[in-house]
Structures are given as C-alpha cells and as structure tokens.
Length: 118
Image 1 (cartoon, helix red, strand yellow):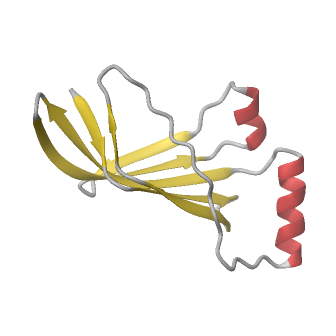
Image 2 (cartoon, one colour):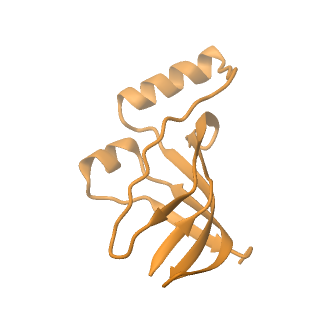
C-alpha cells in the first residue's frame, strides 16, 4: 500500500498573531513502510511588522518562549497494487508548544486533524 499526497500548503504563525510565512510542497508518493519528512522554507511576501510586535517577537524567539503554529492543507489518497483510490482533502493544525519545549524534546505539539470538514 502506498500513500499519495497532493500539493501541500504549509503556513506558520508565531504566538497566533504574526505571520511567519508559507510554502508549497509539490505532490509526492510515500512508499509502504516508510516515514516521510517534509522540509521547506517559509516565505513572507511584503510582510510588515510594527516595531513593538517585532521587538516582542525577537525577545520571545531569543528566550525560546515563542509559540509557533503550523497549518497544513493537502489531499491524501491510497494506492493498492496498481489502483489509486481517492484524494480526500486533509487539514492539520499543530501548535500550543513553545520553542523551548520543542527543543527540549519532551513535549510534542498538539495537533488537530480533519477531513471532509469533520
């Protein structure tokens, strides 16, 4: 069994208020018995942050207290033998963990997963 992913859109925010950027990853296939890691560079086009928000964000990043949230939108299908079955829309939202907690490796982000608007 293989898993097929459509184009994947990822957007990042800091402390649920500051847009850190977004990226798109092209469609790909995940082979059976495989874990796939996506790497991307998030880009902000013409983003403006006022000086107060910028200083707050800089201080929170430096102290590792910033909370980064990720929103992922894609489509997922399954391949069995030579048959590809469906491409369902999938939304995943992860966050609620500070950079320090992530770097310590003891806490994983809280993620919500939905498909078909459930």
